[in-house]
Image 1: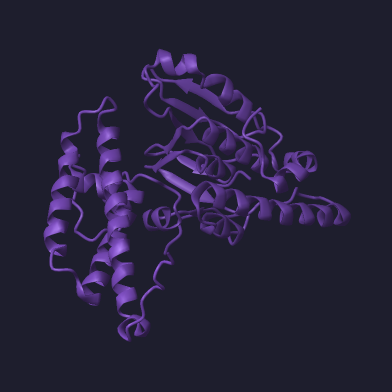
Image 2: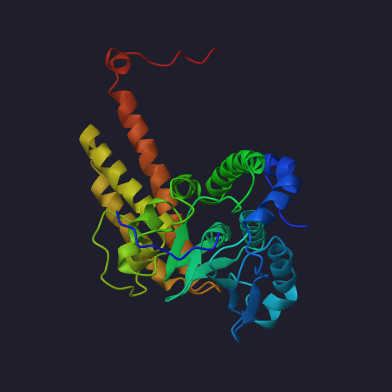
Length: 333
């Protein structure tokens, strides 16, 4: 599973039941997809605690990263309130090793990143998706699993069965990590002798990343995003893709309520909420910028619930039953 990218255009966290039941035979089969020269990932640590993982992925990498990222490690690098960043730079390796590493990274609650000028391909991309936070400055690429060269017909038949099982496991894993199966489907649709490098638009739409690193990765919002990340409330919304999605939901709800016949005070309440949201930049909680992001996210979640309640109430009032005078049965005394 070691391919060069081709440009394209438009005890760790336990496995899922499916993966658990097939772990032993698949670990043996997965070894057939490894180059004989494959070595375990090598981890280097910067003075600020950023970990860079380079090399080929093997099944034992999950245990290795768990031994590295300990409470003592976080204390030493003052990362108790922040996610440990793991930069991944790998051409791939063991598919099962990539999934195992991804589960370990999720349990360790790390931030996975592909740095500028670097690439995370094949099995590495699966490991990358395990990050609680995920950013891509370089290249993230996927493809389907392959067969061992020069295998016999009977062995190929067995391997085809294994690859089908791996496809199911990969799809389930990707959906668990991202809430979408699209990255897995793209991998399954890409020949093993090629690599599909995700575009910025695909990184966002397929939920491969959670935070944008450049404007082309900004989420869709109900307003025009700033050209650069200015650390303002508007930039926070555009850069944090879950918050951008909330903004889009609010924009749609607000339009729906106006179409249903908005309450007279809707615009005034919305302006008051916008002032509240924008005041998040003054948040002085101990987690700094992360506290501001949390404040903005919470503001959106509260307002979404409020607007959903208004929308449902207006929709109910517009039904034929209510218009004809229907009312709940009086409470019995």
